[in-house]
Image 1 (cartoon, rainbow, N blue to C red):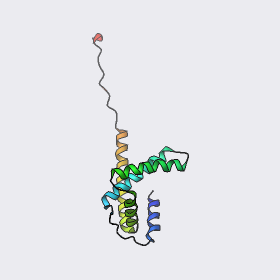
Image 2 (cartoon, helix red, strand yellow; image 1 turned 180 degrees about the vertical axis):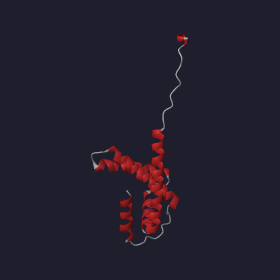
Image 3 (cartoon, helix red, strand yellow; image 1 turned 120 degrees about the vertical axis):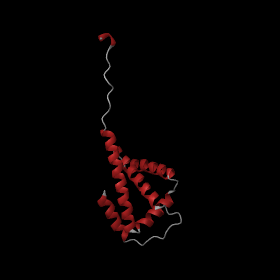
Image 4 (cartoon, rainbow, N blue to C red; image 1 turned 135 degrees about the horizontal axis):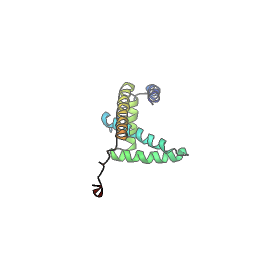
Amino acid sequence: MRTRILLLIALLSACNSADKPQDLIPEDKMIKLLEEVHLAENQVNNLHMGSADSSLVVYKSLEKQIFKRYEIDTGSYRASFKYYVARPDKFKEMYEQVVKNLETRMNQEEKKKSKPVAKEPARIKRDSI
């Protein structure tokens, strides 16, 4: 995953820098959005759908829900993404935080799964006394 991100940064660093959009999504919110987008991508990948078209439809639906939850539109997301990508040092820093946050989430989920289930204490039958 990290190599893909670094490759993306390297490729996009050659692009002309984008002007700051009026509706630029703040860095902290953009980091959370990127986390949610990656989680949605992972969900779709785990569905193992036979068709790329079907996967795309499911992903777009999840993406729409994310944008609605964060009260943004596709245009402001794309403009903000383009703006941050045009600043590779900042974008790399943001993505390092995204990866760190996703790793933390993953570790928390693993801890939840590995917690032992508490057993009820054995009950003594009254007629055996």
